Image (tube, rainbow, N blue to C red; front, top):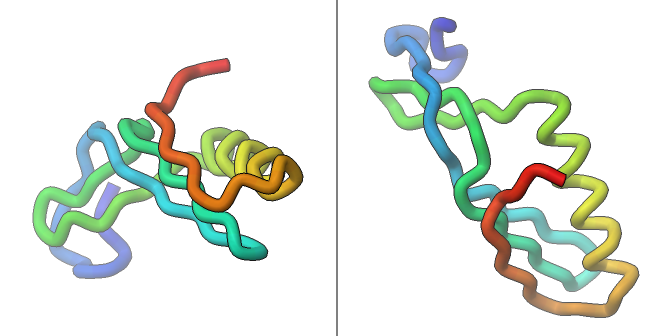
Amino acid sequence: MKCVICKHGETQHGRATVTLERDGATLVVKGVPAEVCMNCGEEYVSEEISKLLLKTAEEVVKSGVQVDVREYAVA
C-alpha cells in the first residue's frame, strides 16, 4: 500500500515495536507484525492486531503493573 504519511513510499511486511500508555502503565510490545513504509519508516498495524494489543494493555492496567515489556506472540 502507499504510505499515507509521506505519500511516496510503499509498505512491506515487517515488524514494529508498539508502546501503549494508560493510567500510569506502559506496555511495550516488540516484534509486532506490521506494514512498514520503505521511505519514511511509518508502521501500520492491522485492526485485528490492534484489538489484541489494546486488550493486553487493559490487562496490564488492571494488574497494577507500571511497565511491561513483551515479545509479540499469537495467542
